[in-house]
Length: 90
Image (tube, rainbow, N blue to C red; front, side, top):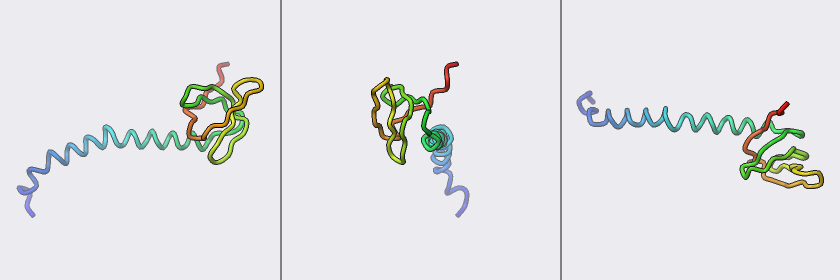
């Protein structure tokens, strides 16, 4: 196979390389960071759910968490529903 036969495919290959570095790779890094954050959750962490509910983790297992959102109100969520961990405001 000679280089002249690859000529029409060079732009397509370059386009794929650009898409990989601009779209696919950053998304993979973001998914990895989210997976690490979800695996690092522990009791007492202040979190915000995807729906915007703020609370403190009271119970946690492999698939679910129980959040205290008010004095006598605990809500049960899927672990994947956590959007982020909130650092102390102090």
